Image (cartoon, rainbow, N blue to C red; front, side, top):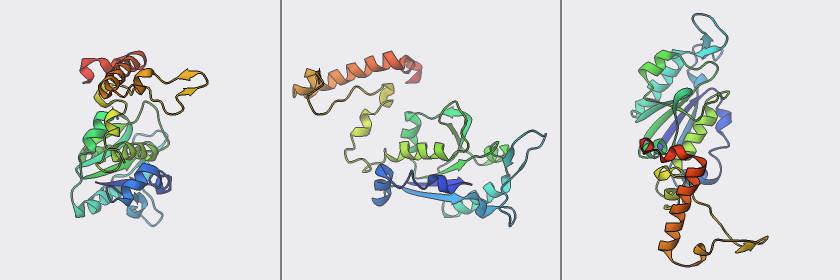
Length: 228
C-alpha cells in the first residue's frame, strides 16, 4: 500500500512513521508513506499557499491552485483510490473505515490548516472526508498519522501475529476483553482461572462474554444493530 500525505508542516510527521509497527511495515516494504510539502506547489516565490477568505472573517484559507497542482502531479503515476480530507466536520473515523481503507492500494491524505481548504477542492477532488473526533486541532497532520497507523497495522504481514488485529476493540462492534500476563498473582490479585485452564473453547467463550460485558458497560451504543 502507498499513502501520500499533503501538508504545510511535514516536520510534524517525521516521528510517527519512524518507530514501532509503522517503521517495521516500511522496512518490510508493506507500506510506503510519502509526505509532501504543499509549499512545493506554492503560487509564488514566497511559498504562499493560503489567502484571506471571501466574505470576511478571521482565519486564512488554503488556496485551490497549490492543492490542485499537487494532486494532478502526484496522480501522473496513477490515480488515487481515495483522496481523503481530514476535517472536524466529516464523518467520524472508526474501525470499519480503517478496515475498508486497508484494502486500497493508493491513498492521498490532505491535511488542512488555518480555516481549512477551499470548498472547490473538496467538491472536485476529495472522495472521502474523515474526522477523528469532535474537536479541533491546529492542523490535519496528527489526524493523518492516526489514520495511517490504524490502517497500516491491518496490512497482511505488518503484525507479527496477524490474528492479533482480529481481536482489537471495535472489530465486530465490541470492545476488547481484559488481558493479563505474568505473574499469575500480583499484589493478591489472581488471573482469572479460565485463562489457565488450557481449553481454547472455554477461553474464547470467556473472552467473548467479557467483550460483550465491557461494551455494554462502557459503550452500549456499539451494541445497537444499526451500528453493525
